[in-house]
Each structure stands twice: as structure tokens, then as C-alpha cells.
Length: 166
Image 1: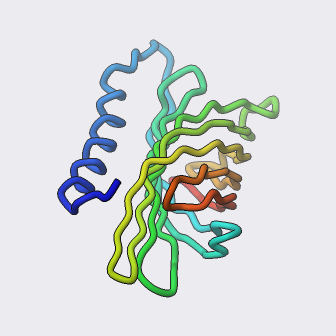
Image 2: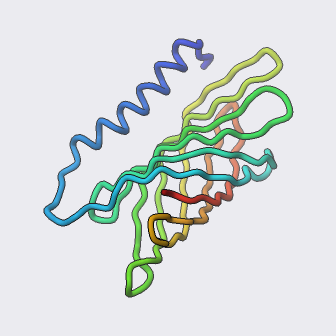
Image 3: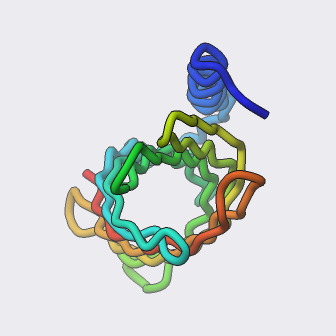
């Protein structure tokens, strides 16, 4: 399906509004919830892309070890542009007694957009991911792996991510 510029804007806006709208429906417990964290990330989209990316994310606690993690990943390509907007749900599992270390598993929808050579494509995909991180004072450094499923216009790829949240 070919998307117009207006359709792309509506798709991106709707995805973000839906993500944050879910937050208002989230029940809060009486115990203190961890704060919302903003992060930066770098990494590589693997074969067939073999390209570095940079981006950011918003990590929102939903309670009971669940987190909403919408992000923007800008992939550095030679010609045109390529970016992904993953909106992932993560489940964190503490891995040590003091609760500083954690692993997570998750996934969710991805909006993939690429343009070049006079063409522009935007498609909906999905990803599965896992990672490991640590609470280090006010920061959370982490490393993650994910698999982005291919679509009719975008190839599937493995992604390696290094990031830190504040």
C-alpha cells in the first residue's frame, strides 16, 4: 500500500497518542512506581542493512514489571532515509537480590519508513526483543537484541542496541 504524506503523519500521530492514551487507563497501586525515564540508544540494524542507527526512547512503568517503551530509531543510510518507530511492551525480571540488575523480554508493533530514489514506503511490522540492564543510580545502561519482522517492502533484520536511560 502506498501512503501519502498526510496518511503517514496520521499513522505516526495515532500510534503515539494511542501509546500515551493507554497510560491513562493504567491502574496505579499504592506502592511507589518507578519514574518515567528518557533514553538514548545506538546500535546496528544487521543483515541485510548493516547500518548504524541512533535514537531515543521513553520508558514508562505500567506496574507489575511491565513497561511501555515507544522509541524512534534513525538508521544511517547512504541515500534517502530510513527510520523505525517501535512501540514495545516489555516485561522485566529482576536477576539479583538487591533488584539492581534485570532482564527483559517484549515486543510490539513497528512503523518502518524508507525513502530514496523518488520512492517513499511506510509499513507496519512487529518485533520481538530481549535485553539486560542495570539500575545504576539515576541511570539505566542496557544492551538489547531484537528481531524486526520483514514486510513486503522491508527485509527482516536483527538489531543490536546499546542505550542508557535517565
